[in-house]
Amino acid sequence: MNTREIGQSGIFASELGLGCMSIGTEEKQAEAILKTALDEGITYFDTADLYDFGLNEQLVGKTLHSVRDQVVIATKAGNRWTESKDSWTWDASKTYIKEAAKQSLKRLGIDYIDLYQLHGGTLDDPIDETIEAFEDLKAEGFIRAYGISSIRPTVIDQYVKRSNLSNVMMQYSILDRRPEVQALPILAENGVTVAARGPVAFGLLSNQWRDKLPKASKKGLNWYNEAELETVLSTLEKNLPEGRTLNGLAFRYVLQHPAAATVVAGASSVEQLKENARAVQEAALTEEEYKWIQDISKTADYDAHRL
Image (tube, rainbow, N blue to C red; front, side, top):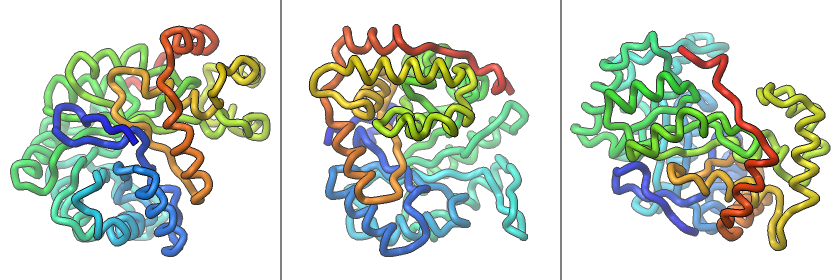
């Protein structure tokens, strides 16, 4: 599988990354998915301290221990579970971020984190203090690079201007082209890359889209109504270029952007993972195919994500 550099960090990620949140808590199943990912050439694994109260990090670290020097492990911090563990609070302070990193290292069973990310963020955060935490962790050798996981263009802009971040994780797909309007141009100009999550848009960009449409259309694609989504998807499906599939089109569209480093997709089964790996290895889009997709779909703005 092809790899791309994360920002200007010298760290290279496979074009398809595994979003580990979906591997579950049953050890044998999680291990099977993770090992299949390795077999398929995936080297980028995204987890977070929030997932399953840290158990996700433990499963990822245990399974990848024997290939540690061959993989990129990305994790996140900023969300703190309450004592009752029925909700979480937000903490982007320097003290918390530095301690959270060390706790993640313990759960993962590793000496350093390849890419450490703020798991959200707003303009009300102590941004300079948060950046100091990342810079300290990098200088101390606990992390190799840092970034943020955010869809807020205003927050992204501040981190690009005020820090040395390497990557931004954000939702991006044919059906969610909001990053193209504001975020991606800024990142591309500054040598910051994107780890794109949600490439198949809640399963809509697959051959099961008709089954997914009633629920998926209500999950945050409100710049489309259901009828518009059906029109876009049926048009894409009926006019697929030879040798292409709908989910393959979805992955290759995201990877076409110069800011894209990796597409992070979850998989709750070995079969789903193998299909994702197949899809991402379809040929790169031609300029004509890329424009055709853009003509069919539409962009939108981050109206609800300004602060």
